[in-house]
Amino acid sequence: MMSFLAERMSPKRFIGLPLSVLMTTTTYFALLYAGTALNFFQDSRIVWFDVWLSETLSGLRSPPVVLFFSVATAFGYWGVVMAMALTVTCVLWLNGRQRYMAGLWIALAGNQITVNVLKIIFERSRPALAHYHEASFSFPSGHSASAAAFFGVVTLILIRERKFGTLAPMAGGFSAVLLVGASRLVLGEHYLSDVVNGYLVGGLWAWFGMWLAAQSGAVAAGPDLRPTPAWRLFASLAVLAGATVVIWMLSANYLSNQIIVLSFTAAP
Image (cartoon, rainbow, N blue to C red; front, side, top):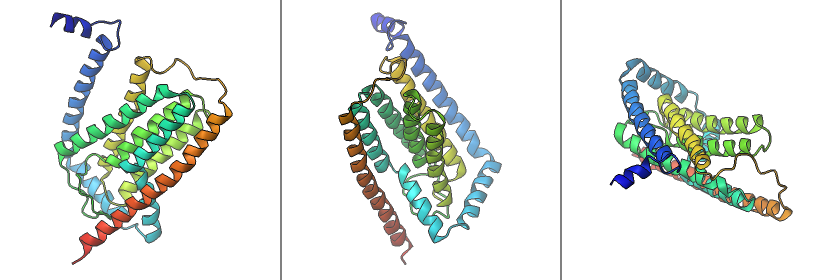
């Protein structure tokens, strides 16, 4: 028992004192977050604004708007996110950047577990004017959280590797995350507070995954500036081309299932 405690308090190993402090801090902030969220839902002004915004946005739906945001929302669907994550993993491996892979999957796994637990804890019902029928609870938005976790990690990797500068990756990642969250609001699948808290959960896990990889020594201090061999570049392009087809098929299947469920639930 004493040896176990001594190992947990050792400052020389990541699994010692640094990990102990990290786990303690994570637990504390998780409890603090839960308490804050509970108080958040007890504020009638916030609940009123959530409902008002949902009702207002429902009046803006038209066939083109619904189609556009339905496509956008598919990029927060877990199946599509997993396909994109596998694609990024393959590209990282082909280009000798395996050190980032653990951070990506830690962020995605931790985010999904956290979202599922929070949905069970809060059991918030979906907006009454939702365009599609969703079986899960509303708080927090899983699509928004998944988008924040995935695109957050990819953005951090591109910035760390100095690919395309800093502004372009940040603008692209921010736009993708914002678009997925906006789609959940316009389609009436979530309230604004669901989306904001989804961003918070996913963003924290994106940061945590990359930080954990760096602290464990998996991520080098600086970018790898060695030139990429031509075969790796062509292989990466082939992976991206194949993944584009797979992601398109998954997105189309997701949207088809959503429409089928809506039609079924709307039938007399």
